[in-house]
Length: 394
Image (cartoon, rainbow, N blue to C red; front, side):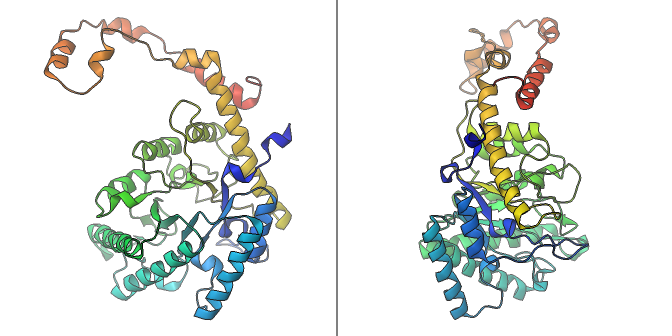
């Protein structure tokens, strides 16, 4: 039975070089694992059934690499991709590690910093396209503040808007087949980050000059650490046709950004998310890559890293099977079936008209009788728990 959940490239599972390559360093301790060569990481990911690998520019090309060094590294990496059949669906740029980003990148007060941020991003876009990426993600890790008096937040948002408009123009001018995905986070490493949730990002996108090119890249940890429902945020993005990419991991509410193995926390939330992405409840299925932006526990050696990576993929496939079984369960179907009313249903469809308004105002609804009806959501939730625990739907 376990073989049924073994990942294959067709599952579209991807990992970042920074995920399986994470050496286990944290703010309180040094690395516990060696830094591994990107080509080695790609070969290992291919061996365990991954579809592709994603990267920041400096995950592959060191910050101070010369042009000739950069070209050699890229050639070798392209050959590894070819040899393994792996691809690079998404690329991004590191605008948070170097000290120059201490006050942000696109939103920094210093114009030299903002200019270098655009320069570095254009080069990272070139690199991503060269490697075959169709999505470029922006996570504004330093776009925020601790001392709010340093700038008017409206100025920060305008600077971010100017940067996105500029970079959309660059992509169009280069005739690249590339879309942008913006990634929200409420805090960390800054005390407060601008545009902290997926909802904030969706509105921000609507103000951009080329908004059709820009979507979102929601991350489980980034929404859950703020106490929000990740499936709700993903559903909003899907309803707006803006779910361009997604970051999967695990997270405990109220903690720092943990980036735990997918499904290792809040299994019910993970099931609801996979149910949404796979379309088992009847909606449109998400067809993009399932990217795991997570890393192994600091307790692990390299063997533990690959157990972590396999665990992310297996858990997703297990949850996908359970989601399908849950939504095929006759009792579940009966509980969530919408009641039909031949008189009322036509009045609630098609928007406003004077005739519909008149008929709605004339309706006689027994409010007290409707209010007394039990909805059986306790039973529905128990059924979900039983599917998760494996005592139903096997």
